[in-house]
Image 1: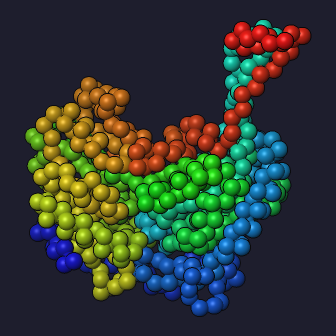
Image 2: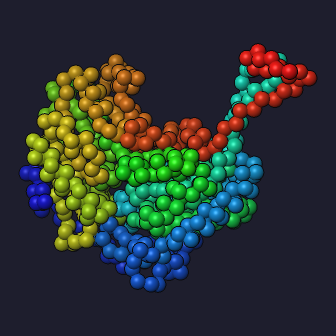
Image 3: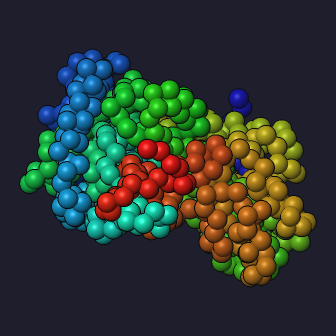
Length: 530
């Protein structure tokens, strides 16, 4: 695959090379942050040779290795599940507000160690400083939400047909929750699941991405400190490892719910295996998100929303904007402004406050991006800006890449395929019905938006025959969801819902109760028997 040449709008040498931190200084910074959180990296480090029994902690800032950690064995994974299962038998009987007190303590510790966790998120996931701090704030916010929820796990009283009877619905703890998380939100997604699961009376076994083990060590240490006062041992267990660890969670019948965030390919494997043992799945998978821009749109507002959604986190959010569907009358004007805005994005060291675009997680991610751009151009697309790799001399093992914009003649197969990198495809439409059809003609259904000042267009997009996504926005981009709403999507996105609203119900089991307080025994539906 030949490299994608830089577009004429973005000469490769226009940005002076920043000063990058070296791997040794990043290792020292991570070690200090972990120590303040309560985790000892030196004590946790593996001593044997590299292999299947080790997890390499590395940093995308340089591509260098930060630490070698022992991977959990199958026996250790089973023991962790057993610990959580035994702890559940006690934890489910603790009153929910007392369970909420543990999450409150966790939120307080997260607040106290916000900078430490943000350091680790930047070091391991490559996020710019404001986004790393924002991710930790999201953890704090979900703890606040969960604490309030601990006093609001409401059932209901239902009108029944029989005199002297009461019909009710109650909710009870479910069991062990297995959390499998991805690299791009290494701590927030864990907190969405764990804070809610704990107040619901469940215990948690967490298998984080093998790309972000250090952030997981820090979170586990903070939760252990929060739980030390009155929670049973085993209320939370951490499993560092690769595929085999996840498979233990997927296949073990003691794990009542598997909440898995990752690729569609992973979801296709996880879902049938959990279903085969009649367990529950909560899947957060791919997203090929689009925004529609109508002729009435405020283009200043639209450009700001589009650039953050498409280029933020270096295009590595599940909610990243990947398709821009623009009315043909304004397409040239909008793309010109987009190219100009992309040209102003500072690329480089994510610890530098001026940087807005950090590295891709691996050089393999850059290879996938280059292949997608080459395919798009073979399909008739025109690369308007970006796609070139930068700072290869300064950081040869890292992948700093300029976000790309490609004008496409139609929605080809590569446009319908999620590429986890900052590639934005621009398509045009004539009628809003055509735009909605283009929008929905992809296998994924996570996040969507429309930029318009016409209420009819906005309502059409939000209607039952409008966007088919789990998230549909008006005059904001596709990324940056608040924790108060349920997060998730449809189709190949998996159908799961996490975080706010009534997503807590996935972590509990429902019981319908009929209480007869009369001296008679009437049967429902008028049945006579004895």
